[in-house]
Image (cartoon, rainbow, N blue to C red; front, side, top):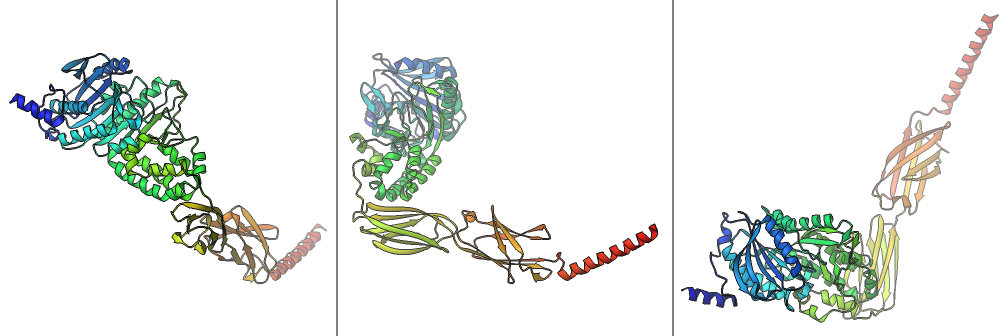
Length: 587
């Protein structure tokens, strides 16, 4: 029976390692009495990193396994025949299986390790740590020239999914350059979270005592974030002045499908203008943040650069994706003041994307991301094509609530976009047009795109229009019920003061395109006037975009001229009487 069981297992997973015995059942993760975590380390040290493996094993042993955490390592170094599975206890590693020599770049080896660990050390949650070199979309864990490719990694994790009945909780890359959208997209359906760096990691790798203690008693999301926190704290401490800049991110893979769907939608919207603005795109992105692998750029910083081109279609793509990146990542960055290799991380946001400087590499076309998105088509639109630009004219004017847009171009059809307007024209419009767009106060950016018959932009006009309307302020200042004819009236609007002289019917102030109302939704108006060398100021209300603002001030504190004469005569008579009696008494 034992021989039959081994044969069945061999058939199931195509394993050359017959000593990987099975135990347990596929329902073990439903048992809440199980340890919370099994931390599986796939330590491929059969290459130039063999020097650092013992130190990382020692760090793991300094923390060790416990009742809620199993730490299991598949170890392979440059010594022939030393491949083995170890259970890490505090202070020591316990040999579980001696495997001879295995190919760590093989999908079969990873499947066997996952199967063995699942049956020997069941847990509620599983963390797979892929320890070795990484080379972005080429793969991870190289053993004598053989990479564990993204498709092989996907299939191995898919096997674990079928074995367990649900996806791997966290896949981590203690390896360089594996923090790219292409990697996360490839693994989106076989793991819930990924932890990786978009640039080179320190050769010493993760600080494993902090990593293991950090994931203890954490759910998968917080466990993945604990690795980010541990790496950041370590880098900040040991690379405070010299060393390497360090980026580490936790990515929610369950959101990657919607992330990429949004990306495709926005790429489709931006695609028509890519060739036309190719030189502008290349110029704007010439200083995008890149790291040791020069064909990869920080995704967020690339979108910032595209946004700086100053085009509506590209800005829609850029701003939309910057928000999406923030929605799927938890990242921390230590920008070393004096990085040994010269690479800073001043603008990193945790996810890289393939962005070549000259042409798209042939190998990139085979990635699932390249096959299922418009990214390669977008890249080739300006890397391989020379823009064709046609002639045309456009005139954009503003007056009292409307922008008038008129254009004529040698194109097949036209789009018109007015940013912040209450109406936007888009779709198939005639090569000649004249449109009025209702607007409110503010500055508007108008884009007019002309397309050829294949849908590419071959003519574009961009114009910034400060829309300002004519304001007519009518008012009257009353003194004791009568209009103060000839009164000098000052109107303060914002920081500007306007002076008018009131006539028998009041005052009328016409302000054409008053600069003080640009971008403001409400301006408080003050009216002041002078009487008998004294200033009187009144706040009369707010201007909220009205074209007509009546102003009425009634002031009952001012005497009429007859009242002034009577008061003056009374004062004179009283003065004469007082003087008369004073002289009489003095004599």
